[in-house]
Amino acid sequence: MKKFIFTSLFALAALGLRAERISTTINSGWYFHRGEIALADTDFDKKWERIDLPHTWNSEDAFDETPGYYRGVGWYACQLAIPAAWKGNSVVIHFEGVNQVARVFVNGKAIGSHTGGYTAFNFDISEAIDYGARNLIKVWVDNSHNADIPPLKADFTFYGGIYRNVRLVVADRVHFDLANCASEGVFVLTPQVSRQSATLVVKGDVANHSSSEKKLLVETQLLDGQGREVARKEVKLTVKAGATAPFSLEGLTLSDFSLYLSHHSSKMIIQ
Image 1 (cartoon, rainbow, N blue to C red):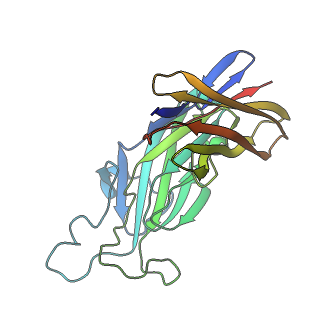
Image 2 (cartoon, rainbow, N blue to C red):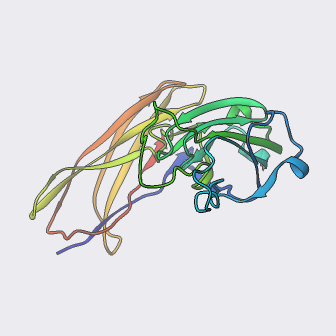
Image 3 (cartoon, rainbow, N blue to C red):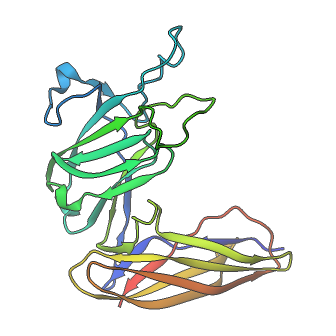
């Protein structure tokens, strides 16, 4: 029986040059304020608490002898130096989980909001950034009981805060769609699986945030456990400026295989 693993890099090759996607956590050096405070307030030394993420404001009151725990508003703030070299790319801030309503601001500008404490989300902040300078990110969070936000009751604490990692993702202006459910933009399906064979489908969307139409080649490879290529599929597509376009790579078939924990990725080439 053979073991197989998907391989490739989330990479964009243009005119023979490869621009790797950057993904870095920004969990250190945050500030927290429990309760409402003015958006413009930056008196971090006196009014805010220095913290690192992940963080919750219910780490103590959920376990003390006083009934109940704080369910309300909290503010987070972080000052980030953004490299000048990132200008011209798509810069996305990615939250793995914030409980349970979040509003994100960059340099005082409202970027977007998210409802639901147990799903990831992200926002493109490219146009709000001052490149080559320090930028102020603020996040308003509310874990108040809300009859419109499930779950309404549970046998666990509804911890308020940014309780999972936060990352900055930097990608070329043409990239696998990061806005697709805050994912990597590429999905693997197995519509048919038996003891003898399995059929795979690799699909997703490509986002073109550039100012011109792009002709693209999306390619995926299937490698065995020793890194040898056993299958390859590619598809061409044209994506208009400011638009997204779906792709689907079908007909990848395995035989004589064993189940294997694996990862996948794909590459995209501008023609």
